[in-house]
Image (cartoon, rainbow, N blue to C red; front, side):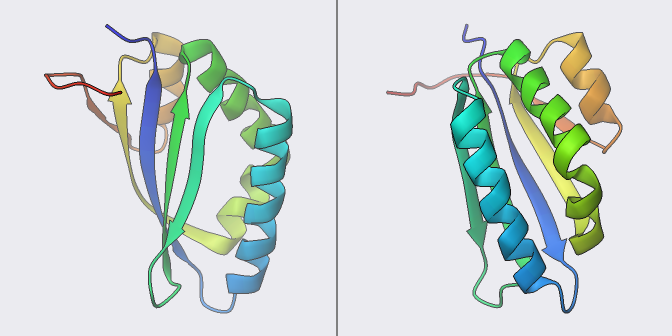
Length: 119
């Protein structure tokens, strides 16, 4: 089984915060791309009304996930929470206990591999 951990985070952008959210997204994407080589996907998708955003994140393993969560907490969490309302996070894969402990705080739902393949 793969050690990869991935999730889909859904947030609502607070009214009047779209430009601040957009600027923060750019900063977070640039930092993640530059400093986290084991972050395999970090994709932000927004609805037509620009009110809801899905963030798809995929990490090589739980260690890479914890690095990202640490950076997010230290550098971005306060600003991210100021411009968004958390809706849900669905986690895929087999995260270790440290990752689940961190994500349990935001109400994560966990789905484990059941079948299929990825290329």
